[in-house]
Image: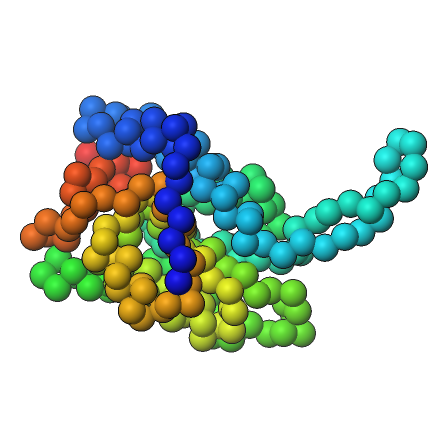
Length: 213
């Protein structure tokens, strides 16, 4: 497993804006989308490319294209906030939603439902082999690990987890349970507290994206 944490100053500035408790939900959504664009740019490095002739206004040349079919898997609720940024650069990607909540006593994920097929039909999707799991927070790693298991059962051979913020505990879990999966983060924080929230963190990303009161 390799872990990439964004080092650009722009990523640090945007992450700071997300961390601030006085950032309202509208600004939080906008900033999350901007940071997701940076993560999506980094994520394109994991896509296969192919060459195909194109016509410029003056002549024929060989052009470069990304692989035709990839899968974006936002973990609901908060993962949906990252989706538009990735669709900007991967507009033809399939989108499989995955809904989970967490048990507040054990901090383990509770599966609610998904649109992930049990196994990809190779006749229908012959070019699918790369999947990006989108979730702003990698805390205990439980939700990410379950999502990875489901993509592997669907025969996705190259899986990349992409998050805004991670904790060492969540990274260690993925390293242990899925050493073949790449991780891309905008930031890696110090630790989890007794409630399994990341410190210093940014709070509950889902609640800040989609306030209910």
